[in-house]
Length: 150
Image (cartoon, rainbow, N blue to C red):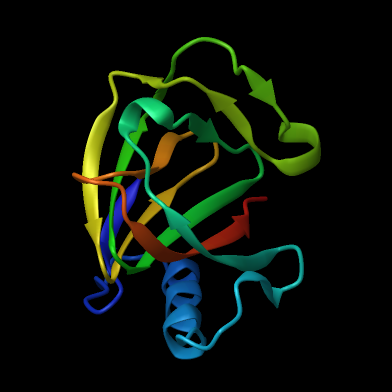
C-alpha cells in the first residue's frame, strides 16, 4: 500500500503510478461523466464515481487478483480500512470474471482518512474497505485507476 496526495507526488513513486495519477489530474474535471474511461485499453483505465459513504459496519472488504487500484479522492472525505491479512475465504468470489472478491473484513484492519486530493494504492491481494463514513455518511467523488499487474 502507498498513500499520498496528487498535488505533492513524491520522487520515489514508481513512474507508471505517477503517470496514471498525472493523467487523472490532467483529464478529469467536474464535467467528466461518471463511468469507465480507458487510458490504455484493458491494461489501464479508471472508473469515475459519486457514491455515499456508509458506516464501517455496513461496508465489506475487497481485494483483487489482476489489477492494482489507485483510489483518488476528488471530493469529500472517506475512511478506508486496509489489511495485508485476509480474514478467511471470500464470501463472494468474482476474481475470474470481475477481478474482485468480497469478505466481511480483513484481519487486524487499520483505517486511514482520505481528504480531497489524497490517493491510496492497493496491490493485488491487499484487502481494503472503501467508502467508510467519517462521521455522518456523505457523498464523495472519486477516480479508481485500475492497472493490470503482469
